[in-house]
Structure formats: C-alpha cells, structure tokens
Image (cartoon, rainbow, N blue to C red; front, side, top):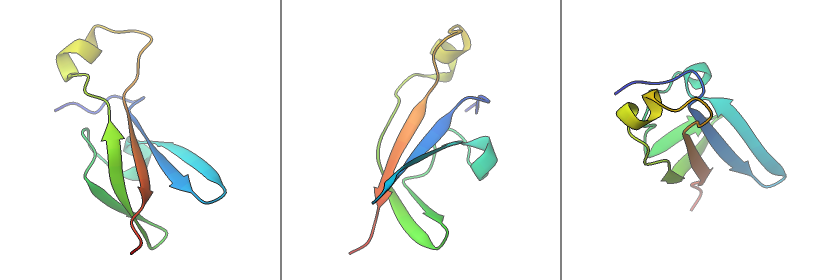
Length: 72
C-alpha cells in the first residue's frame, strides 16, 4: 500500500473536527481501525475505498478516514 501526501484522517471531537494528514500522524494508508490521540481512543467509522492504482491517476482527489471517540 502507498500513503500519498494528501491522505488524511478526520477526528470528531465534541466541539468540532480536526483534519490531519496521515503522514503527520505517523499513519500508513489504509489507517488502522483504532488510534489514540492525546490519550483519547478513537475508532474508524469509515474510509475511502479508492485503491492506490486508482488514486495514482487522479490529480484532484484525496482519500480520507473518519474517526469518532471510542469511549464506553
């Protein structure tokens, strides 16, 4: 799998969202089902199904994954 510079994750917080590039978070594409940020566990809700091969030929498309807090 290839992680492109514009692959990103979106973290849902109570007061808004934070969008970060995967590479800045130390993540490879596809991002894991669970991540921890600032001690808060998050679970992946959905992510782009665009393959590396498809993405390689696209110039104005990026892949993203959305996470929500995983607090019981």
